Amino acid sequence: MLPRSFHSGLLTHLILLATASVVSAQHYRIKDVFIGQDFFNSWTWETFQDPTHGRVNYVDQATAISKNLSYVVDNQFVMRADSSSVVNVNSRGRDSIRIKSNAAYDAALMVLDLAHMPEGCATWPAWWTLSAKGPWPVGGEIDIIEGVNLNSNNAATLHTSSACSMADSRNQKGTATSTDCDVAANSNQGCGTKFSRDNSYGSKFNRRNGGWYVVQRDAAAGIKVWFWPRDDPSLPQSIRYGSSDIDIGPEWGMPEASFTFENCDYGGHFDAHQVMFDLTFCVRPAYST
Image 1 (cartoon, rainbow, N blue to C red):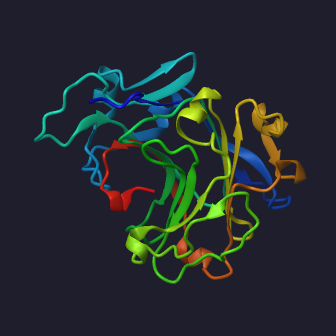
Image 2 (tube, rainbow, N blue to C red):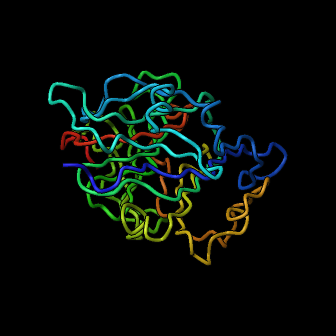
């Protein structure tokens, strides 16, 4: 049986902005932009066995192109999984994509304009960042878009080495689902926040033609994640129109997820991260969010 939808997203924009050196930490200036063909030039297609034990076979860039699993249409980058083959029971699983940015980023603001994501039973798409140095969990992991099966509320989660936890009550729209970020605790549940909007993931997200996710991370601000559906009138204009300079102001409102570091040494748990996208299937329950 095939999941209902395999397109893992039309990534119309991924913009990474570095903190401007002479202004406040709430002001960011554009550093890198990835649109369409840029992904083929600046990202690596990974091919190792899925560490979450999904029924998936990650293919290299050449194979992804030849099988129409990675391509550009109308300047939009598409990554998807095979949706027609009957998978051999003895194989790794269904052909799919896992890519990472060649560059790594520390203090930054990341803006993702996503038009579509997978939906349906067995699917697990993710946008996340991972320490370029490692080894995991040293240097931390930030899960920004994550859900499984028929979820409609996105979840953002941190995974760290020991001695890192979050306060129960934080200034965020979402609901804290766990507070211990240590991968050795609670079967690697991490410290997560479930978003308040039920159109931040899955089929309801797709019916709104997607939306924008924005991540801020630095030692002073901590790690924050905002989400706006495509047609949300409250979306800051600097995000909607891709301004080269972006200020985080009151009009942004409260983030869906806010991770503050009163009980965690930010510099000791998070370093420069590479940016990741992947689409896996049928993961073991312990790995699902």
